[in-house]
Image (cartoon, rainbow, N blue to C red; front, side, top):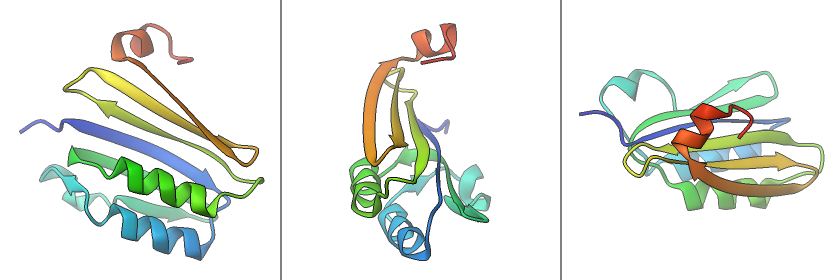
Length: 114
């Protein structure tokens, strides 16, 4: 079965408390069989990366966790591609805030600056 959702994101600098709480928020995600070998959450020095393909992603829990740990120095983004609805929601992290917007995947593919 093809994944319905694809999610890619990163945030830095990220401390251990954020990593622990993000891992907890991601526990309810339902990945496809192929993605089981790729960790949903990984660390590269002070950056956390989210990489997911599957059926269910706990978007509200993940965003709430990011908001709870948000610091003015952190930057990053979280892209959630809903292949069923053919939409993408992008969360942008920076300057102590998280903003989001959604658009058709057709528009995203036409203009990579989304």
